[in-house]
Image (cartoon, rainbow, N blue to C red; front, top):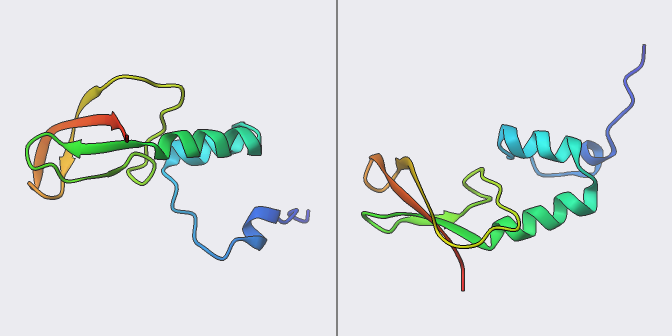
Length: 92
C-alpha cells in the first residue's frame, strides 16, 4: 500500500516544532480555523511572576482562543531554573 504524501510536509522547509496538542489540533480542525487560533494564541504572553522572563504562548506550546483576562498556572521558568507561578496575559 502506498502512502499518500502530505502536501504540507512536502512544501514546508521548516521542521514541525508544534507541541503534541498543537499537532493534534492541526489534524482535527480546518486550515483557516487553525490559522486563526494560532494568530489569537500569539497575542498572549506567558511570563514568570518572579523574574518576568516570558515569550508568546504559541512558542511555549500553548493554545488560547477567544480568551480574556489573566490566567495563572504553575510552570518551569528557565530564568529561575525552578517551577514558578506563570502568568498568562494578553499583549497590549
